[in-house]
Length: 252
Image (cartoon, rainbow, N blue to C red):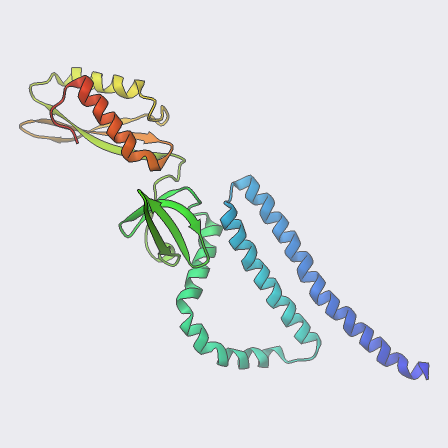
C-alpha cells in the first residue's frame, strides 16, 4: 500500500520543492541585487528617492517572475496565458501609455544619473531645483514656484543641468562708460570679486567683453556659487557693492 502511494508522495513533494525554489531563488537574487544597489548608492551618492524608486521597480519585476515560475510548475501554459491576458490588457496598456512612458523614463533618469536631488535643471523654458524624482514626474522648485515635469520629457527633449559639476554659474553686466579709465575700473572690479565671500574661488570668475558701443564697453561678469537658490541674492549683493565702491551709473 505504502509502495503504491510512494509515487504520489514523491510527486507532491517534488512539486512543493519546485514551488519553494521558484519563490526562493528570485527572492535571494532580489536581495543580492538590492544589497548591491544600496552599496553602490552609498559609494556613488545616489539619492534616497532614486534608490526607493529603483527598489520598487525591481520588487515588482521579482514578483512577476515568481508568479510566472509557479504557473509554469503547475503546468499552466504561460505563453497562452500571456496572449490571453495581453489581449485583455491591451486597451489598458494603451490607455496607460503615458504613465508607462513616464515610469520607464524615470528608470532611465535614475540609471543614467542625468540629475539628482538638489540639482538645478532647465527644460522647455522652466528652471528649478530638483526636489523629488517620482514614478511619473520630477518636481522642481524655483523662487517659491513649484513645477511638476513629466519624466518622459527628460528622455525626449534636451535639458540643461546647471549644477552638473557641483556649482552654479551666475551672470550680470557692468557698463564701463568712455569717461572712465577702463583698466582702472577693471582692476577695481577684480578686487571686489577677489575679496567677495559670496562666490567661489574655484572655479574663478570670468570677465567677458559682451559689447562695445559709442557710449562705452559692456562687461559680463560670470561667477560661480555653491547654492543655486541663492543666485538672485548673491547677484543683488554684488551689484550693490560694485555700484557703491566703483561709482558706476549703469549696472544690470
